[in-house]
Image (cartoon, rainbow, N blue to C red; front, top):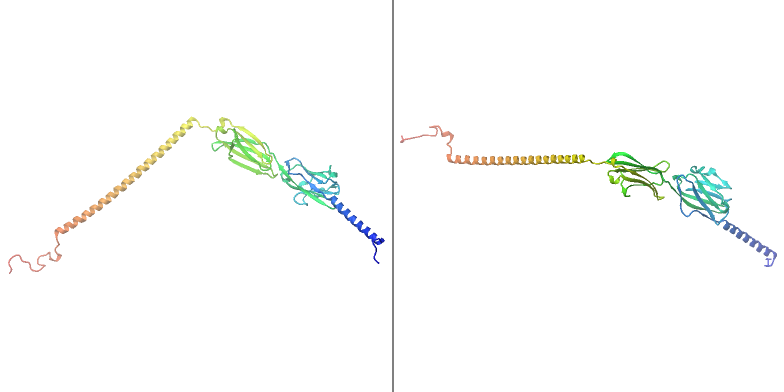
Amino acid sequence: MEDSPASPGSVRSRLLLGFTLFLISLHVHRLDSESFKVIGPDGPIRVLVGEDALLPCHLSPRMSAESMEVRWFRSTISAVVHLYRDGRDQVGQQIAPYRSRTKLLKDGIANGTVSLRIRSITPSDEGTYGCLFRSPTFYEEAVLELEVAGLGSTPHLSVDGYQDGGIHVVCESAGWYPEPRVLWRDLSGQRLAPAMEKISQQADGLFDTHITAVITDASNQNLSCSVLNPRLGQEKTATMHIADVFLPRTSPCQVALSVTLAGVVFLILLAGYCFWKQHRAKDAQQAERKKDIQNLQSELEKEREILRAELENERGPSPSPSCLAPGECGHYTTGEPS
């Protein structure tokens, strides 16, 4: 026999189903109430080399994070920068570069606010960081960027002797990050081209500069060297005044000597050209004379041939050699026949 809608079994079933649905909805509501967002800074955090960095992070909506896990990490979750778990800091989980350098500020942890302090920032600390909050049923994270900048030392200017007809000036500075730009300027602010530029990164990640310029005339005797940090838009500048006495000058005697030497060189070149031209003309004359002699000899030879032919025609035919002696060519008579 089936239970009627009003039977005690039916009522118990409906009550049990309703209670179960209530528990499920209560559990879902509890899960929803434990969901949250992790909020980090809107933009990169910029810190100077050697100073402390403060990385902020908080929950939204506001809730206590005292019983949660709070993890700061680098590229992966396992690269722990700082770990808070079970109500205390887990310093043994940190990666080597951050040991004894971090502190989790927990003054606002009851409201879901924590900040991480990293002491004595170096260029290697630059990059992306993650901030993760984990409850027993939910976790969320935020990502933030840390930028590092280094303002190096004020440039040091020095004179390093003479080079290429001018004064060799050196500009040196150290401790910059990221790689700086170096500018030479004259008194009017116009840029000067460097003679040599060397910017090198040291083992600590900072950059040193060694830039040279050659000053050749009085128009550049007042000059400055500026080293600029492009990330901060800040620069440090040193100036130098070079006295006239140190600048290369040309005395009247040197000018006269230069003009004289130039004149001598010109005369030598001119004499050489004239000698070459005269020698070339002489060779041409000798070649022409030799050609005339050859033509004359050819004409004389032709005339000899003509004279030889005329003489042979005037003499007539020559007697046969066998008839030259008397009596050898038959009878020969001079009078009457016998």
